[in-house]
Length: 185
Image (cartoon, rainbow, N blue to C red; front, side):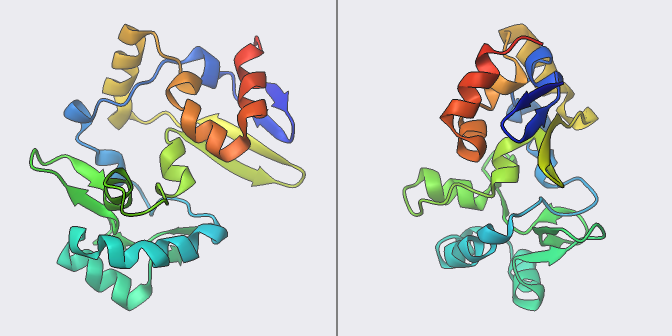
């Protein structure tokens, strides 16, 4: 384990390889799972603010869920998570012409329609951050549906922390990331 500022970092971030392979997995991480994606309380207003921009990208079922329960709910662990449709799709999913699941918020961001990229937990995936009293744990979440990303990461020699440079800096800052880069487990 490595300690940087108030974070304890799993060695998996520098040891394991990862590079998303959407052509293989088809974005199923936004569909599968037991609940929606974690959302920071400060992001709820941003999700509500971006709704008019992405509304037409969302499915009819997603719009209905949002109208009935909002953009987030509190899961069994007492955490805010994105609302989901029929126990699977995140309400912010949309599908491209190839049938690949994408994030409607990220799509709007890439089209220059919003400056909100998407919830930081989604941007950080497959890394999950858990808050504890006095520190945060930064862990690599290994999930079978991401096996093609592990294979591609190995082929391209891209470590988890390298693949996630932008979201790690977004979450923890450039100084934190530089310290992670220079650390040796």
